[in-house]
View 1 (cartoon, rainbow, N blue to C red):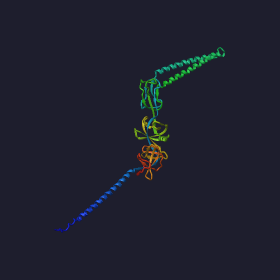
View 2 (view 1 turned 30 degrees about the horizontal axis):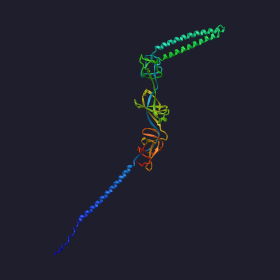
View 3 (view 1 turned 180 degrees about the horizontal axis):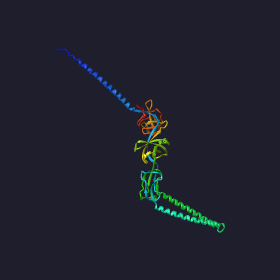
View 4 (view 1 turned 135 degrees about the vertical axis):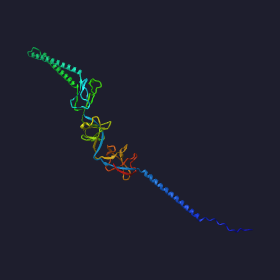
Length: 389
């Protein structure tokens, strides 16, 4: 029996280079995993910080300042003549002539037109005849009463008869007075046949043409002439109620008109309506301006600029800082803890871009400008800017 005595086969050996490469690969993989975990953790932290930063709103603050000096208020106004009249025909008749046309400067009492009054002329003649008749009757009654009074002295007539004659004389004298009054009335009406200027001014309209039937009996009666005294101009301005207390007599204003854009006219307040119009919530204010050269035209439009003294103790803030809510007007401030605090305020005059606060704030306070509709008491915020009102 043959025994195999050959040497056993040794196990294969691993090259040294391959072992080193595997070790390096393992270390690299470990580093990659660690780096990935670190990067992801860093991104998670940054995302959390970004989310938190986005959750805290940024706000800008604006400073409150005291209301000093005066405030400019510009409002539209309507101009009117110092005196204006529309002259109607007082008597029935036909226009015979007119002597003044539009634009004519006239003095008080100047004849403007003449009306023929044939019916009135006949009434005057009748009244004159009635007066003559009444005077003749009164003269006869006076003579009769005198004779009967003489006869009463020697008892030739009774007292009753004398009293009757004296009474008849009194009636006839009263008739004379009535006839005289009637004649004076008709003559006064005849005076209206001449249309005269009631004051010095300029003729602004003429509606009288020769032959026109005019007077109370005419259909569609209109003024024959219109007259205006524009030596001074009245201005009427509707002022909001918030400024009504400042509209005192003597308050001055500057007036501008479209036809003279580079020129300003001085005016002053002379009175107000002392009542607020419930439809517009405004007070009607009347001003007067001198009008040399008749540059200001009655009936025209004007811009009236008032220099109104500001209310004492009032503060001025931008309108953008106000919060309109059911609880009333509010503003927001930021406390030392960077949290919102809401304050209820009382509004004074509104100038559009700014408003006056008359109660609820103190000078030097900083308010949140343009607050969001959802801003709430105690909300955390971050101040990103500050500006002056």
